[in-house]
Image 1 (tube, rainbow, N blue to C red):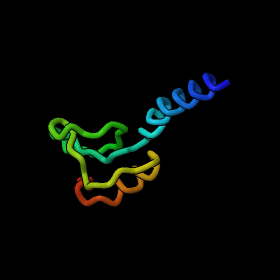
Image 2: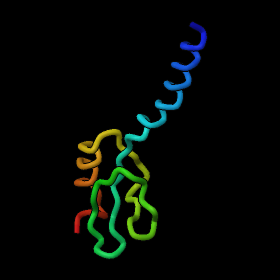
Image 3: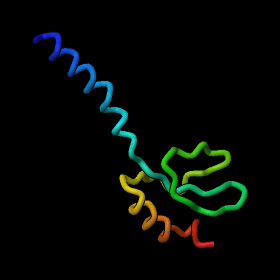
Image 4: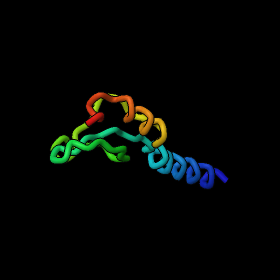
Amino acid sequence: MKHYLIASLLVAGLATPAFANSAFYVAQSATTHKCSVIDKKPDGKSMILVGTETFKTKSDAAKALKGMSECKA
């Protein structure tokens, strides 16, 4: 029984970080200067982070994108 408990805690501990990566970013293309919502942190070369905030949902990031002055071109 002890082995099952340890195994389940180990599996839960390894699976939890996979679910934690649900962040969305507002980024601007370095070449076209168009803004978009992306789910990976921008690299700073081809895509540049706009602002400093991360968003939990894509819809929250899209709302923020509409209000950012850098994205009103």
